[in-house]
Image (cartoon, rainbow, N blue to C red):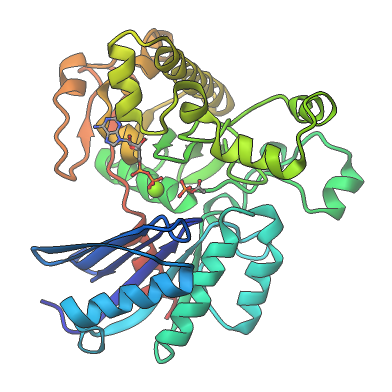
Length: 397
Ligand SMILES: Nc1ncnc2c1ncn2[C@@H]1O[C@H](COP(=O)(O)OP(=O)(O)O)[C@@H](O)[C@H]1O
Ligand SMILES: CC(=O)OP(=O)(O)O
Ligand SMILES: [Mg+2]
């Protein structure tokens, strides 16, 4: 096992910390884990080192306490961090604004900028920053690198990045499409290019996890993406509305008496699959829909309808389509969503091979699920944001 040149990757979400210790050159993961339900009473901790997995339930008040627990587990169970040859800590940061089009070495000024950008990623940047601050304090002797979700979308064509909002207001408040999940969209689109041996592809990447987003990528460059100023816009997600008429907000304020904080919570945490079908977990929605439960069936219908709409829109934006990739939890694991998302899209040159779609192996490999002769190659590509963050962090130092 590698004793030098590992990277610790930290992804601090709103109520969780995901982490991996890995070798960015070989991709070998030495340890990985997850702290969930931070600040919700009973937090769940899972730490895997080699073949050994440890689970704990304990009270964890905040991200600082969470990271201390993580480092404690490394000490107790291993691998010993001081002997693990860590050369960098890579942090996922969702919003990098106009400033960051590439990963950066974190210093005081970078921390301040991430903080300044918090209003445009209110659910993501504050916990990202909390993770950075604690990790820098606990691991002061290694360089820390921020890898931004928005970086891949930094140079979107102006027409795709601009909202038709009053120009002065938009400029004064830096309102534009920043996108998110860019590390995944970039990684997946590069995997597709490498698999097909072509640089000049017009691709659609569908990142379907808890958060969901679509991107249109031409020749390796993002030309549109579904997330906007914040990660709320676009596709239907586990708990987020995605696209919604902004006037619904006025309506809820004026006629339902909701506050902005309540609407924020409603759109971000009580909507999407959960709001329609009662569960944010796609496996549960599919099972209930299969049993004919009407709310879950509708949730799935709305989810798939939105996906199809974006596929059509992005094919039009690019003037055609060569490849389409499904990725993340739902994209990699749900033959039902993949089949329904592409049903009837033969007119775009998409021909799915139903057997291949059903037979996709969950072994980490890239698999083609389009039919022989399909003009558009459809693939399932396991995303690996951690590996990509580790590689980018290494490149910076
Ligand atoms: N076999 C499966 N079938 C359908 N959906 C699945 C399956 N396995 C995982 N998922 C879904 O993947 C989603 C989580 O995706 P993931 O990429 O892990 O999310 P995140 O990283 O955003 O937390 C959940 O909705 C989960 O239900
Ligand atoms: C940006 C975003 O939505 O991230 P996640 O899917 O991790 O919530
Ligand atoms: Mg994810």
